[in-house]
Image (cartoon, rainbow, N blue to C red; front, side, top):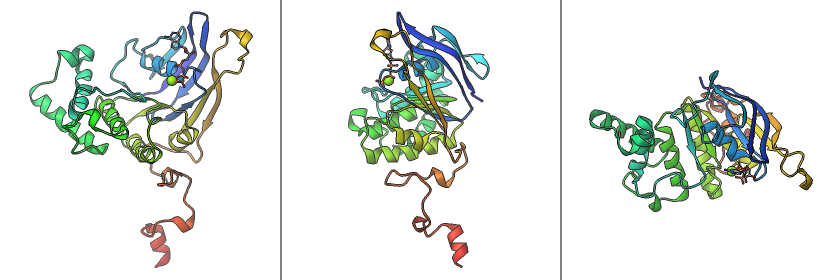
Length: 282
Ligand SMILES: Nc1ncnc2c1ncn2[C@@H]1O[C@H](COP(=O)(O)OP(=O)(O)OP(=O)(O)O)[C@@H](O)[C@H]1O
Ligand SMILES: [Mg+2]
């Protein structure tokens, strides 16, 4: 069920130590928000979880076995920008996610899904587009979509391969605050409904605390100019969110209000159709 174990992982580029002896165990269906200053190695860490980069020391395991050394369908990814292909329609972009699943990059080019499978794939792609709020936009091209819509599309494209692990690198960083709040609600819903373990890099602490079950902060504690990059980032903080959020279990503390707040609502702000309130009243 997608436990990720990171054991004594180092990443170095030549003399530059980016990450230093990282140890982390990520439970199935956790939502880890990863924060830290620019350049501390967050993207590098995600790339290692994707096998786009390999650790220079240490091991990364998925469910007790070393992660495949090539990117594979159990790990999906969404970047801040440019995740979707401009020359494919919305529907084509999601179907590409399925073609990639069918056979990697070769699959996308040559091993396309045909016949009854194609029909089923298209049905699933349309359902997924509805789930992310893009019904009706199937025939549009990414340039005809807003930034928020493009990120919804990128999510649908990653999700159609049914990844066990979803990696997000500042996926909502470029969005306007209002649109961000909407997409936070969507992200929370997808995490509840699908068997996903999520690792999300963000620069935004409030986003980290709003969505995460756990907030992990990378930091470079020794950062003297004389160090010359000989010390990498370590895990400075590892905070479990309280009250605990559990995937699949909607809680009051899950509510994200239009103002972007997600603290439990005070009594006066409870909605009138709250069954508990109605019971008390009558
Ligand atoms: N392929 C590479 N070769 C050499 N150095 C690299 C390479 N990739 C990343 N680095 C270096 O590794 C360090 C960490 O980079 P990384 O992109 O992981 O940081 P980050 O935490 O994601 O930063 P940001 O918040 O700005 O996105 C940087 O010093 C960067 O220059
Ligand atoms: Mg980065």
